[in-house]
Length: 329
Image (cartoon, rainbow, N blue to C red):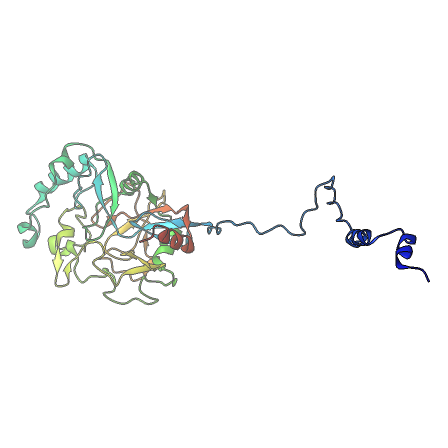
């Protein structure tokens, strides 16, 4: 029998070597992988970018000056019949005389000579005052649309055109005027489809020509005609004083397109429309007079202007809300 020392010698190991083999039997760690020689591929989807919320786009809307009403999203019409001022100074012109210096002075002088030759009322009634500035030099009449003013009368078609132009506006065409008069409901009268007495200042029981001259067909340049009153009040009312006579458009109103004074329109042949307070016609928005040239003027002829609506970019309702919140509290 072999002894254990010989067996271990045959195997070429000793007890010390046995311990060494035992510890070296564990695998050595692998070296780190070599860096790739190319860029890694991109991820299949990029991360979402962080950005501000998009603002609403601007909205283009038709607009009118503050003294005008928007009609059919394209036309601007004076809210009230015009009174006139001198464009240079802003001084208010008398609504009872022509809006031009030499003619106003001539009419005033003429009626100073004729005064006292009519009825008892005419003999007692003084002429309206003609301001000194209005008789001394030429005026540049400018139309102004404002509530609670005596509207201009004694204006010729030429006066009306110049007054609107000096205001940055123009006379309405016949179609524009009638469209505005009929309102959104497209009615024959500003208030409805049928004539109703008293709704507009028209078909009055009193005619100033009869009261002053016993004849409704003469002396229509008398500056006192529009100073007459009857049991219903002044024959010529201030602007906006007849709220039932309003043509409605988009939540707004145009006053006295029927009644009060006639209004010149853009017609080279000479036409005024609207049926002033003493005319007996009951045809509402269809009413018109085509018998006079543009140079004609009397106590019934007045002014109303039109303009084309302008288009401007305005914030939408959402954007206005955002803008209102940006300031904080």
